[in-house]
Length: 567
Image (cartoon, rainbow, N blue to C red; front, top):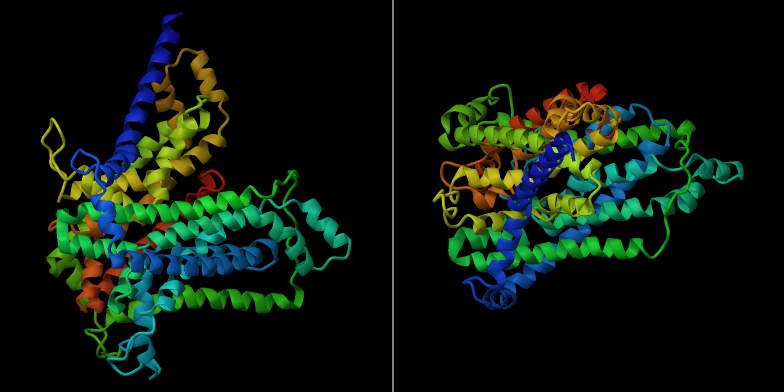
């Protein structure tokens, strides 16, 4: 065996080992620690945590609430997301790109921001309703503090997720089937019911499973709408138990987090079982069907679409902006009362809020940069690797993101409750444990577009360099990274937008000095300072929207499908 071949194989082994270490540290180790806390908390087998969890009535009540809002939010998300996907993808509706960008934006906004925006739009202190003299009297209960309110906002939050998945399936719909049905005299509604929806069943079921997982693991919306009404779901129950009991209740909260994971995985398993009952494969590889001409119905459909976008996006955000401009609760917005004092307060005067902006920005940047650098070698092994264990590698990376965020948060707490062995380094109660959780949870957001980039690259360049004697690391540095960097960086921007105002993980991991935007925003709202929370929310939404526009400018240099909102 030549020296070059030995060096190349040696570099591949080093890369594989490094990737395996990263995956074990970020994905497998915290989950194993979580399971150990439940079945063997003191190093010996014990059922104390399981009995404590199962024996508590609060567990069963919160589980029932979780199922109710999870199923309800999923149904609403599937109905709205599928309808919008059909109209946007299969018809000749105009301004499609703008509609997609606006409809998808709620998915990019943190759930607690969505909840706060809707609360400020319909509450008794709503500056928006006061403009029209329609605000209910102060002290009136906000109608969103209810089960239906939580379900409504979960549907609004995850309708775009369903839309993206169903739309991807609709784009692969074969032209022959649709045009043959039309030629046979079938109307558009008949084609939709008999051809389109049956073929889209796998996409719709997959979207429903992901929406269900997202709904049952959501913390922000149930926290803002459910806690004031004493309507607890499992994530908020864990938050309350951990806030009141600290490390002493970690065993019970570990069991509750696993219970959330079991519920989420049950939804995915149900989707898998239903998908296997029938053969939904599409054998055609032709171009997608021509858009259906709406004719005289197009203005009405377009108006309905924009009305939906106004209701779910622009009106709540407008109400949020108005709230951020008034000096206090219940004050109407006028030329005399309008002020920017709330923004000055959260940016420069309130120590925790100012610190939260700094922490969230550097945590988001650090997580994004790390993910981009790690996603390139991991993507190389997954996209171009021929080993049988590559699929296991992919599943391991997906695990922290597929499970609800509260599961990873509790697992991280348990993993770093004590100093790291041999080093004595303490991550518990520091900002570094939040960074660890962000790295584990959001790595997949950079990995997916990176793998997509690999699949759209001609490997001949890399193979030619290999034949010429270039080692793996040289090929990675000079050929592979420059080619996939745009896709990986786009994934990094997605991570930054997602992590900037994240709450589910940081709500359980923060400590004094390590506050994040989401944590301080939640604290302001819980303390009755909605104006300050609104100001912080408006800033994060503005940053998110600007970054979405910036990534749109990168679209010509990115592989197809990297940007979810790009038409």
